[in-house]
Image 1 (cartoon, rainbow, N blue to C red):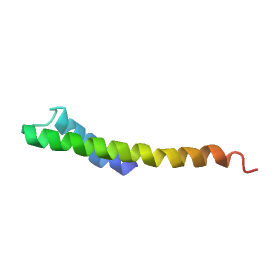
Image 2 (cartoon, rainbow, N blue to C red):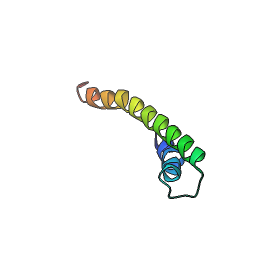
Image 3 (cartoon, rainbow, N blue to C red):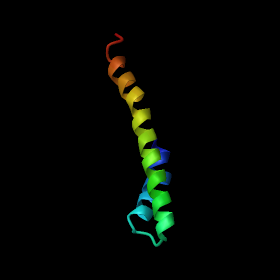
Image 4 (cartoon, rainbow, N blue to C red):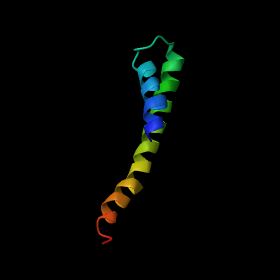
Length: 59
């Protein structure tokens, strides 16, 4: 999840938001990639949060 944010989502968001020079097609592709990886991070965080909350009830 950390890798997704630092090395995929943030650089792609910079391209999509125009902080880095790119043409319109590259901006659209970068926005879609950032969205898909952000959604993946959200789906991965749900089981992690469940495990963290349920672990306090083990003992």
